[in-house]
Amino acid sequence: KSGCHEDEELLLDSDSDEQKTEESSQKKLCRKKKTRTVFSRAQVFQLESTFDLKRYLSSSERAGLATALHLSETQVKIWFQNRRNKWKRQIAAELEAASLGHVQRIVRVPVLYHEHAGGESAPAALAFAHALYYPHALRLT
Image (cartoon, rainbow, N blue to C red; front, side, top):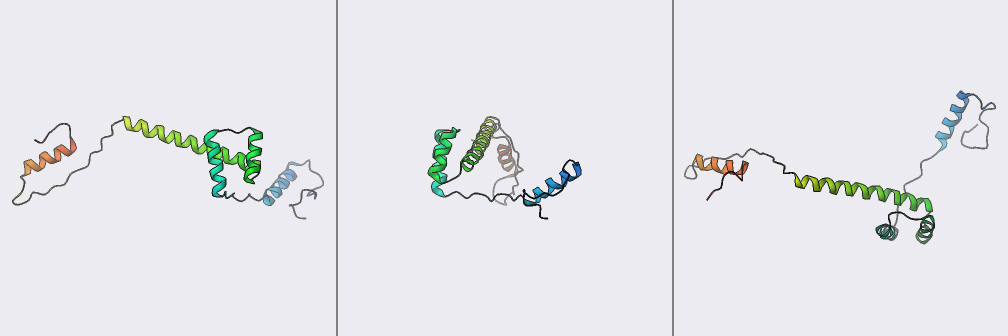
């Protein structure tokens, strides 16, 4: 028998652990993952606008929004959960970027130079390279 119909009996004695495992594995094989919902631009706009006003919806607000957008309440609920997670990630990234802005990071990059035949001398080129490494230490006037 196919294990995809819940009303069918797979095994007569369901007390055995081995049989329960087989039954649950049959159900897992039949359960299909729901396809990803693609929201229209208008739906996303309305969802985002609502999210800007309120991060959390009451059940009646969720029901009303779902009806207005022709979505299920579950779709609206999951959208808000995902959007709150995205919002939290964005805030964490902004805080991290702000904290890195206060810490001065020094990255030293070697400067290659060539002494030109009629151009600048080696000490001037070295002074220029030194100024690139340590801009606060040497001022060229």
